[in-house]
Image (tube, rainbow over all chains, first blue to last red; front, side, top):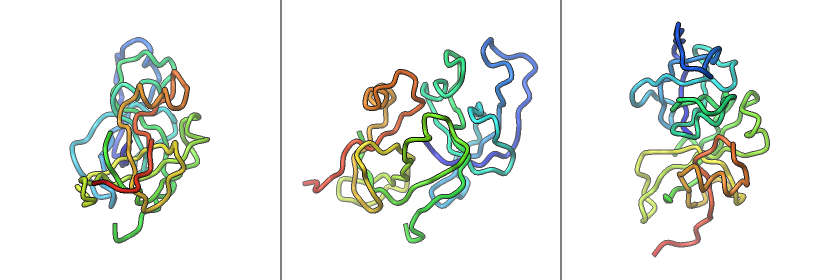
Length: 92
Length: 87
């Protein structure tokens, strides 16, 4: 998993069966100092509660789809948690 | 599997139900000599690792689900070992 910042929302009009109603959010990947790093991805939101500006952690790869219900859906990034706090030593 | 060092953890109230009983550690990836590569990964703890410990992270989903004896856990990166020494 990696940390990301929700920077927007995607509203698809047609989705593959199984993904109806699943929120699709724009996520900017972050490094360990919470600075933006890498390209923005579209992630399905398994919490269904994340919104723009929030710090989240997301899973990539096939395991992302397992966070959803139904799970046999074509998804490669999914938001797993809304992060309240990151405890990392400042020097690291 | 990859080498890393636990540099902290993250917590959140709203998360996937599987994560309610698992710790999420921030693991900085390291070279064999212990120098950080700059990358990091958030891994689930399977061995009781704590801050500043050198660890092995299994970054693959099938093995991860096997460790937690689950067929549907949305987990890929797992801390599977604590390292005493690399030589």
